[in-house]
Image (cartoon, rainbow over all chains, first blue to last red; front, side):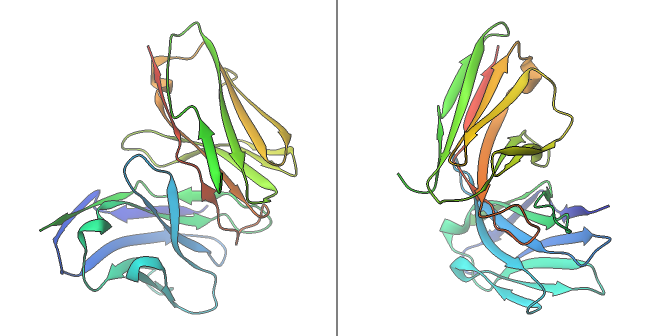
Length: 114
Length: 114
């Protein structure tokens, strides 16, 4: 069965510092993986997704994630944090097959200090 | 209006009330979803409609009743709710119901059950 674990419910970085948000997955089929971001009082917005075309995936707002099959990981990074990056970030894995259902992690809240 | 819209944005109801949440997508998508987002818990998929047919019902209590009259509209009818049903209810849509599809989310309805 598919599952997602996000390590750290809350991450705090200084403005300009590296952002690293961790996601590990479990999947019985080749996974499709997603990162979504949720700003306060808003719905979720897709940051990027892995669809097996390339292991390093670039997304919006300078974020990228690397799929590592050996580590069953899909960590999200950004070289330099900006105040506007403060939000909650969700990793998700697709159930695969013909179904479009996503399994979400519990989320990681990112705080950015000036 | 663009994207996915939800009304109302906030709702307070008593346990004996009946209310409905509305979702409308302006993206021409064929699949629509209802999620429940509670604090400290992963997003919980409640219902999925594909081409106006319900394809997923994740053991949701019968006090939640979905309706999809056409591919652009999705409703969630609520009756005799419990305080633990207080949460953010998110609607999403995707072009189709498949494992590689990106889901587009609305801003959510914040529900408080007294």
